[in-house]
Structures are given as structure tokens and as C-alpha cells.
Image 1 (cartoon, helix red, strand yellow):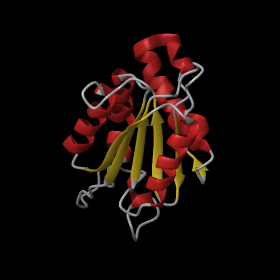
Image 2 (cartoon, one colour; image 1 turned 135 degrees about the vertical axis):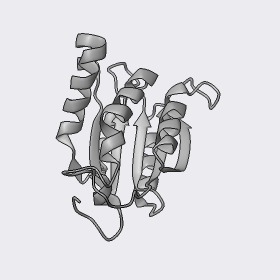
Image 3 (spheres, rainbow, N blue to C red; image 1 turned 90 degrees about the vertical axis):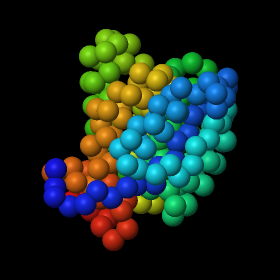
Image 4 (cartoon, rainbow, N blue to C red; image 1 turned 120 degrees about the horizontal axis):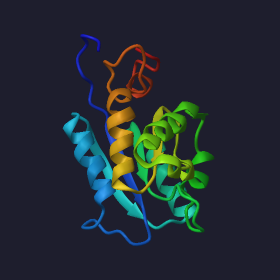
Amino acid sequence: MSDAAFVPLKVAVLTVSDTRTEETDRSGNALVERLKRDGHELADKRIVVDDVYRIRALVAQWIADEGVQVIVTTGGTGFTGRDSTPEAVEVLLDKHIEGFGELFRHLSWQEIGSSTVQSRCLGGLANATVVFCLPGSTGACRTAWDGILHEQLDSRHQPCNFANLVIPGRGQHG
């Protein structure tokens, strides 16, 4: 960790689900709890049905919003017929974070074994906004946040982090 001051990021959380409500959204709420615990600000939180165009429209809106620096989605990354988050988001990304999915599946494998191969989570950068698409389970959200995002969204994390790519005036690794 660097001696520099912590810089809170503005994070939007999107739950993709045909059935969850604010009261039953354990995964989205786990992400909100973790981002606040780590000192970040909740920019927005929504639930949208698993529809490519609705997901894409909202994520695109957030990417264009200067008040959102990070987008974390949960849900819609599996292989069932309605799982469409990767298809909705991938076309919006300027750059893909190839290692994000690889590292997530490595961490997840330690918890759920070969079932992790069915995760199509992804990460990328679009318009100075970092975007992460996570599976819908609360456990997967905890794994991703605690094992990756906690450090990568902290501008003090060395030797590099994603925070310094979205903090105005930095635009590079710290």
C-alpha cells in the first residue's frame, strides 16, 4: 500500500434478475455493504430484468455519466437461456480486462470446484469507467469483492490498480 490518501470511488451496482426485488436482492446488497465498508460511495443501485437491451441501456447510461466511475453487475452470467449480461455489456467496452475472469474463476474454483467453469464473468474499461460483471450468487459477489475488487479499487494498492484509471487527472496506474 502506498502512503497516499485513500480516494473513494463512485460505484453503481446493477442486479440482473427476473425475480429479485430490493428486499430479496442479497447479492446486490452484499456489494453495496462491501463498497461502503471500503469507503466508496454508492452512485446508484438498480435491478433490471435479464434482457440484453435493458441491461445495455442502463450500463451505457452509467458509462456516460461522469458521476459513475465503477459499475458492478451481478447476475446473468451463466448459461441458461436468459443469461445475457456478457452479451449486453461486452460491446460497450473499450478494453477488456482478460485477467479478471481468469482470476475470479481461480478464486471461485477453491470454493465451488469445477462449477466455476460456468461463470462468464468479465471486466473491462469504457469511457474512463471500469465495469465488472459478476455471477448472481451472493458467494460469488463476496469472492470477487474480497479477492479482487477490494484491492483493485483502492488507489493505494501497489504496484497497480484500476482506481487510478478512473480517478480524474490520473488516468494511469499509480
